[in-house]
Length: 112
Image: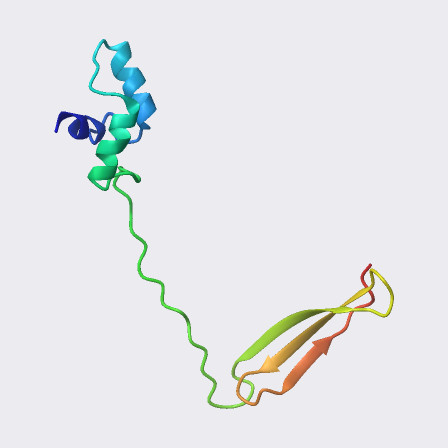
């Protein structure tokens, strides 16, 4: 198909269909309307980036395993409401993954 070959050519591969139509009209050449180009691209499952793209490798979720205490620590932050309006406290906690005990905590002053 002439339209699809034109769109996937090196000249127009990184251009939107509207730009392709305008450029071809400036050259005195009319293939089809912009909407028809979108229909052709949708029929060929090409309504996406037409340039050759690198594919990222499949992400593997890291797994943290502790076989003894003090090997892996984790942390958490919690925002706690204070006794007055618009008063908040932040609680920072460090946990040992193996024993699940609190290794350290930090309670900074009141944050307004």
